[in-house]
Length: 309
Image (tube, rainbow, N blue to C red; front, side, top):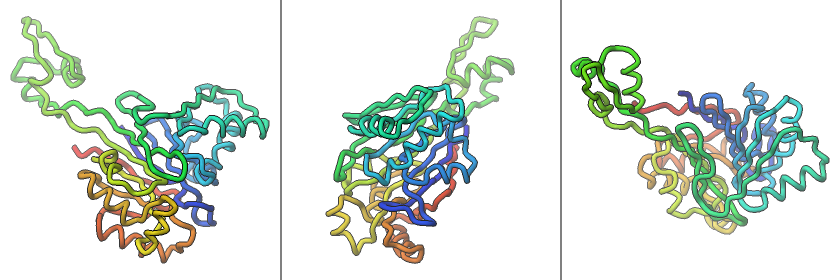
């Protein structure tokens, strides 16, 4: 089962010609989930030839302009592509007001159902087949939330030789055992999945954090992420500015990845527009000194999330 992330925009505050505003699309099989919708989100969606009209749900971190200005256009265009399924939008308080006021002022033509859910408390906000998306609180200048998508544990590896030794014939009974069912053989003997399967295997996990003051509890929320997308807005020389504006340095993001005990890759995002591409190499070096498996995300960068086993 495929799970992959696409960075649609990596910039913060203002769009640049080569750096759209922050947005990440996650694709799990045929389902698409959008995290934030900064200005120019549509451009990257089209350039990547993603089936954006199939977006199941949009998850907004907070209602600062650089994270929501791409949303009205997406809502309007979805009326032009014969959408029939509801579009779910999740976010902190005021996201419903933003969407409703945009629809009213722009006189949007919307021919599908939009379901907006504001999250007052951390917890699971969306559940699908074999996975759940969870929100948790961040600390910014206005209410802000982070998100994780985590898959359920998978059954353990199937051992055909054990099934054969127990007399289970090749065929549908093997599939039922792999699916976690007990099976009964013609002689009345019951074979349980644990008799032919190894220990359960972990699913995959994606985490998304922007914008926030650094605080160590974030590490627990993103623990064991295969991909942790986190803001790295400033270099460490601007720590005081980061604290004042309730943002993070790239080095602090790297400490979260390190302290989580299990993050496999850190993707920095939401860079200050003050940084040129050359400057960002310095920002990356500061993060890699703490957490070597760090990359600078770029617009339209692709991250496949693979199973470990």
